[in-house]
Image (cartoon, rainbow, N blue to C red; front, side):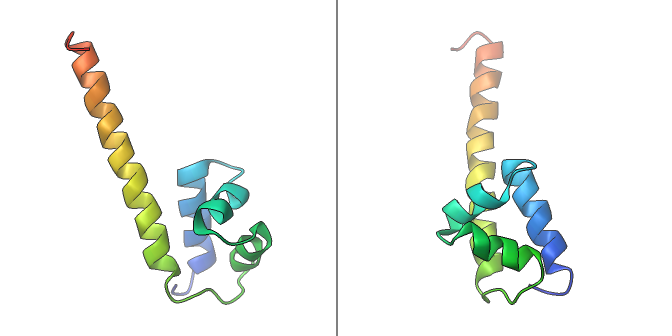
Length: 79
């Protein structure tokens, strides 16, 4: 992650999990919550972290698209 990576990590974490994001993010990244806290504090992060975060974001986006479709069908009486 580039400079400002701690802010980006926090923004992604909060977007995915809300204000208590560090533990659920660590679970989904399969690292300890201490590791995520260290990354958030500015410690070195693995080079593949942006790709891993993108994967989580894309998965959530797909889930949200499916839910939007379900609600739209429900609104139109299709459910």
